[in-house]
Amino acid sequence: MRRLHRERHLVRRIGWLRAAVLGANVGIVSTASLIVGVAAAAATKGDVLLAGTAGLVAGAMSMAAGEYVSVSSQADTEKADLAREATELRASPAAEEGELAGIYIKRGLDRELARRVARELMTKDALAAHARDELGISDITTARPIQAAITSALTFSVGAAMPLLAVVVSPTNYVVACVAASSLLYLAVLGAIGARAGGAGIIKATIRVTFWGAFAMAVTAGIGLAIGKAV
Image (cartoon, rainbow, N blue to C red):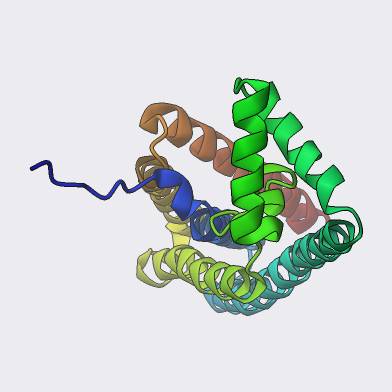
C-alpha cells in the first residue's frame, strides 16, 4: 500500500515572506543610512542614537500603516471581483460554465472533458472555481492586511535595532565604519535567509541586497558630510 505524502510548496510562504524580508531589509538599510548620514555630519554619539531610535519607531509605524493600507486595497479589489463574479453566476450560470470550460480548453483539455470538469467544479463550489481559475484568487495568494502589517512592523524593528546596537558597542570615532560594515553583513545574511526560505539562488540575492544597502549608505554619508561641513 502506497503512503500518501504531504507536499510543502514554497509558494505558501509568499505572503508573510515578502512582508518579512521587506520589513527587515528596509529596517536595516533606512536606519543604517540615517545613522551613517547623521554621524558623517559630525554629530555626537548621543545624537546618532537619538536619530536612529526615532528612525526605528517612525519606520516601524510607517511600515505597518503602509502595508495595511496597501494590502487592504488589494483585499478590497479581490472582494469586489468576487462580488461581481457571484452576481454573474446567479444571472447566467450557463455562460459562466462555458467561460470556465474555455479556460480549461486553453490549458490543454479537450472540449468534452473541459465542459465536464467545469460542470463538476461549479456543482461543488462555483464561486471558488471561478475565483481560482478565472481571477487567480486562492487561499495562498489572498490578501491578509493585518498579517502583513504586523510582520512588516516587527521585522522592520528587528532590522533597525541591528545598526543601533552597532552604534552602542562601537568606539565614538568608528561609528560610521562599524555601522556600515555590520549592516552590510546583516544584509548579506538576510539576503541568504530570504533566498533560502523562498527557494531562490542565495548568491544572487545576497549580492543584490548588499549592493543596494551599500549604495544607500554611501549616498547618505555623502549628504551628511556635505551638510556637516556647510553648517
